[in-house]
Structures are given as structure tokens and as C-alpha cells.
Length: 479
Image (cartoon, rainbow, N blue to C red; front, top):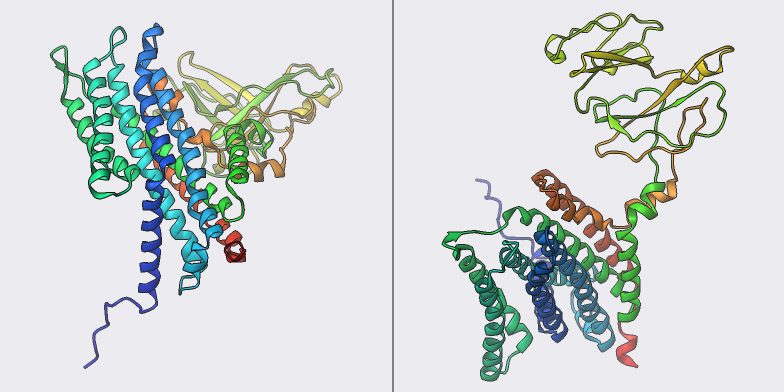
């Protein structure tokens, strides 16, 4: 009888997982024990708690002031904590010989560095969680435009003060780390305070919390993780000051990524309708045959079927105008020999685009292939409309460049595209404008943001392993 397969882990995998867990746990605990971690955390929590006071000096959008300030505080101070924690976790251990002691045991370098990153990210998650709770409470305090919820504010700051008292008593009795005890005390008290404030009535009515802010705060967590992994990767080769300067440069470049690289990145527009099933965009400009200068400005890109527009396509050289389809064209339209609903159904390149306005019940037929040839014909009269197309999930940039008789915008820079992809774009995690416009943040966007954050963190983890692989860890301790 065949023996049943054993469920016991492989003998080599168990020590690896044990080492990973122990190093990550110790890194997490050492990070929480750092006085600078507690100092920056308290600074962030007090700043977020004070922001509602400034809403009394504005006439409107007081919630926007609190939301923007709270998220900016969490992102910036989270970035600073990431740099300091990573430098303490790796650079200091390389200098004092702790890393050499660990690597002299059967601990592989990649296990060591991955565990360090996990420990730092866990500490940053604690920082974000407390700041997120503080932001929710702060928004609740500033809910009324003409008065503050002083009771909720008093409970919040009372909880912060109580956590420090508890930590002081615990430090006096057990001689343990005061910063870590204070962080753990806040980690236990602030969730309880948030629940109490949630049920606390204002004027006899229960106000609750602004739950629509939660997705935006989750995206801030993704950005803090990305910053933490970046700072940890750089700390394998650089000290605190150098790491701080490099992270500052990358952070500022990431904030301006769309301006520095995005506007120069490659976005190829085509004169013909591209194949595929993605969202189809188009841009156009008008010209007359006498004009020979470069295109000054294209129209703002718009979706083919955006708004009240219904679009059909033709590959016929001189098609007859499409039939009238009333106010509900999707229901009555039938493809014919001259016009079809989808450009991929054409057997030849598309020559004409016809857009139907549901409100005006009129067709606008535009030639989309060979517009320049019309302008070059002898005796041609204008104006003519040049049109270019692109498939893209997000709204593309307004195309630039090209000539009136050659409608081909500049494709962009390949180097700018590489830099735009490699430098983390922190603006993707900033949803303050969407919250101000009262637009809900889709869960799909939060999931895509999480995927992007995982890719960024994975890239920096790989970079950290590569930088640390041949790093000398014993010379500083010997000297």
C-alpha cells in the first residue's frame, strides 16, 4: 500500500520561514522602539487633530481642508518615517556589526533584506492606521461649517494623553521601552475612541463617520508602502543623509512625474482607426489648403461615443449619408453595406466617420483618412478637418506637433516613457480632488492601485536584493 504524502514542510523551508518571521518581527519591534518614530507619529496625530480649528477661518469647503491636510500629513511624515526607519534597520546594523552576526548564521542575504523590508512596512502600516483613524475623527469634528464638535476633539486628545500616561506607568513598572508602549497604547485606544465618537450624537442626532474617505486613505497606505520599500532598498548602500537626499529627489520627481515625464512620454496617435477593443479617443484640427505652418493646437481628446453621440464608420470612397435613427439609435441601427457600427467590422481601412447627435438628430460626417490629400489638390477649398485616433484606458494627452498637410502628431520620447514608468507616480494615490468633487472612488481603482503598489514594492525589493548581494557588511565592525 502506497504511503500517504507527508504534509510536513520541507526541512529547508521551515528555517527560512522562521528566519524571515523572526527578523521581520525584530525589525518591526525595533522600529516601534525608536524615539523618532513616536515623535513623528505624535506630531502627525496632533497636526491632524488640530486641522479642524483652521476650518473656522474659511467660509466653505472646510471638509476639503481637513481631508487634504490629513492625507498630505500622512504621506509626507510617512515618507520621513520610512527613510529614518530603513536607515536605522539596515545602515546602522551594517555599521555596528549586527548584520554580520546574522549573516554568519545560516541566513541568506535575500531572506535578510526581504525580512527587513517586511518589518519596516509593518511599522509603516501601524503609523498609517493611527493616522487614518485620526483623519476620520478630524473630519467628524469639522463636519459642521459653523461650529466644531468639541466633545469629539476632547475625547481624541484625551486618548492621546492617556496613552502616554499608560506608557509612562508601564515603563516605570517594567523598565520596558516607552516609545513602543506608547504606540501600542494608542493602537488599542484610538480604535475604541473612533467607535465611541461614531455613536456620539451631535445635537441629538448621530452623525457617524465619512466612510467615503476610506478608499482614499487606503491609496495613501499604498504610497507609504512604496516609499518604505524604496528607502529600505537605498539604505543597503547609502547612509541616512544620502538616503534622505535621494528619497527626497525621487519623491519630488514622483509628485511631478506627469509634468516632467508624462507630457513627453510616448502616446502614438494614428491617422487610421486602430484595431482593438479599448476605449477609442480622437482629436482633430481644422485647416485650409493655403496653410503650411505646423499645427498650433489640437482639440482636447474626446471619446468617440462620449456624451450624446452615436458613431458609425464607412470604408466607401463616397458613401451616402447614414439614415435617420431617431433619439434611440442603438435600438434601431442595423449595419449596412456603406456604414457599420464597429470599425473592426470593415473589410478595408476606414475612410469616413459619421457622428449622430441624439439631441439635435443630425449627422456630422467627417473624412478620417487622407485629409491631407484633399488639401494638396489643386483648387481645393477648405476648411478641412484632420483627425487622429488612439486607444487608451485613460484620457490621453492633447497631441502636439504635425503639419496641416501631414496629420501625424509627435509620438513622444521613449526615454521619457521609461522614466515615467520607473519613477513612482505619487499622484496616482492622491484622491483629494475626487473627494472634493464628491465623486466616489471605485473599488476597481483601489484594486488597480494595490496592484501598482505591489509591482512598485516588488521592483524595489528586487533592487534591494541586487544592491545588498555583494555589500560588504563586516569592515565597519572590524575597524
